[in-house]
Length: 281
Ligand SMILES: Cc1cc2nc3c(=O)[nH]c(=O)nc-3n(C[C@H](O)[C@H](O)[C@H](O)COP(=O)(O)O)c2cc1C
Ligand code: SF4
Ligand code: SF4
Image (spheres, helix red, strand yellow):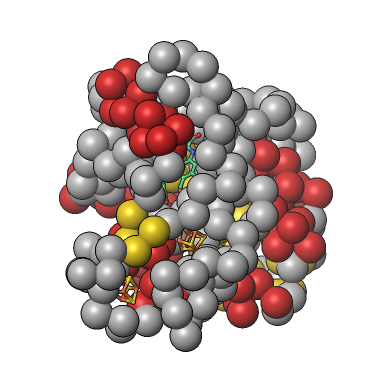
């Protein structure tokens, strides 16, 4: 079938998912000679809109894995605000080298329930947002090359089918429907409880530039006083990562113990994984 519009949509507080989405989109665009439209739904304003897709569109959609699933506060956007109409899609997740558990199977499942036909899926091992020693520096050049090759293989498969109905259901690793969220552990093996943790600010380093408030994925940091986070914090690390002054950090003991546990036990680098749907009918 012929694709007439390519859209790449992503949630990416620390930039890994964005980098992979752009690599996949660039290769798909070169293959089809089409421009790419981007939907960056990292910030709350973008998640207020609803986006409709047609039969000859291609949606590339990526999210990071949080606690072995899709980020729960972002899930409603994926379920309600992206509407397919027998639209071919490519679903991928980025995860921080522990496990993608049911994150990818959840995304494929949600796509199938909302009018999309995932023709391909992938899980990329990328630098962990807070246990930054894991998959450090990834996606690297080799990862981006793999993303490109995946996109080219996928476009070849899409070309070979008459309509989206020719895409067989995709079987990826993980449970469908997804199982429970992963429960973080401390170094001593006990549950790490940091649901209410929020970032703190070093007043000696902070230059009151306001970036953290602007990039917060939940719009939770007070722009008038960035030391205050009155809203919900999902621990996405956008504020920490984007603060050029190194003034934002987490000091919650269970959060830090969980980070240490991850960096102690999940150092062995994982390989990226790819699935391309079979043709049916
Ligand atoms: C709150 C939170 C929970 C996470 N849970 C997992 C997880 O269960 N497994 C895993 O391997 N990585 C986990 N990660 C790591 C992210 O999936 C990974 O860093 C991803 O690359 C972040 O994407 P981004 O750069 O687009 O924000 C978690 C990160 C955060 C912030
Ligand atoms: S991004 Fe960093 S330096 Fe800028 S206001 Fe926030 S904490 Fe301060
Ligand atoms: S305050 Fe929490 S939700 Fe907002 S950017 Fe920082 S870590 Fe993410």
